[in-house]
Length: 269
Image (cartoon, rainbow, N blue to C red):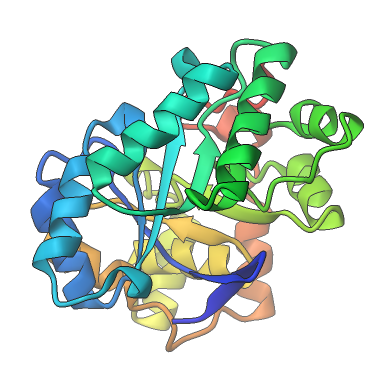
């Protein structure tokens, strides 16, 4: 599986998202068997323990797997975030976390920056390898830059052909921020005839077409599934390519914010 390079570390280009996964331990084991080496969890998902237990049960070593987690806005603030990092390490039963994200931009500028500084300090202490954000719009990213702080390595946002977040994507590319795509399968709302047309053309399922679109734009998609066959097919996307016309057809489907299927709080004050 190809990698994105992050501040000295490699991040696998596809990760398993475990939001609302009620069989996380088994799904993560299945993902490891399918070839995933990147798991995306969060404190708000309440399944960090299951991610950690699956890794311990697997044949993989800690350094073979890339683990992302996140702190939700209720834990924002310097001291709260410092405690939240330790709590995630305790739940995962790990010595470090590969990527720690601020889960959302709620709570306002002051607490956002306090939270970010706490994560940078946790990185300096060796508890986190890479610091990033999630659901951050340009305004929120500019706050970090204006404060003179190191820019986040990653911004994880809702991203798929119907909601392409083009201004945020352009800003992230300009500033060297890697883009992770959550809900790349549009939460299963994959009935658009263009999706079906391209799936038939390539002999693939629609989910694989959407993930291939994401990869070819340079994003790191985070498909979620608890179904073993889907877990496998969602990572089996490196042996075909969408052509220029395929990509244009998908790019033309952008509905902007109206295409979002999640909370998508990139415009939070």
